[in-house]
Image 1 (cartoon, helix red, strand yellow):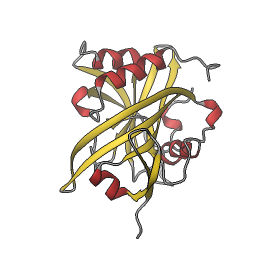
Image 2: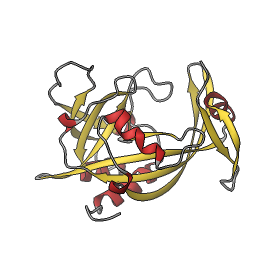
Image 3: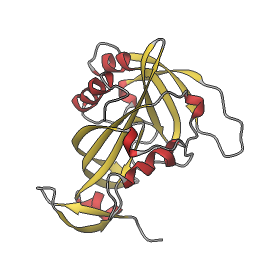
Image 4: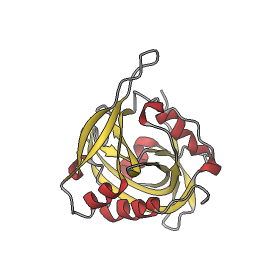
Length: 216
């Protein structure tokens, strides 16, 4: 089975070619990714949704992460990558529903499956104010173990170091044809999150706090 190809870029973000996924991460080639953070307003305030990565993921298994995200395959645009939201969360979303939150330069290195990796990404970040409950989502079982919702102000306090843990509500992934499971209470602590820079999390959270339905 052939590997997914990514476009790769130089230090000035100029495309210099394509390479297979494993080679991109082995050699630390710069590539592009799509991030979509979802929030919703409730009587208790604005909430933010976190994806829990499946335990089978090659990097950061079982960690909490961006609501929906993915790499851009070779030849894809950021607009094409919106498919990640429906693939992972089961909800159709249009690009004109999203608000651009800018870009983030991401760098991480470590070991996955016994192999070293270097992950260098330019991340195109978007926010979506989407007023549906957790039970409306249909999660991609292969990628997503669960979806968790917490108060946005609590998440900000967690990453500012003012809280050790925060309460959340979760829902697990389930297979096609199964009855949707009920939500359950959970507690999120900072060591359970993918180790993006805290400042990057906080910058996005602050922008999400001020996101308005008519803002694009």
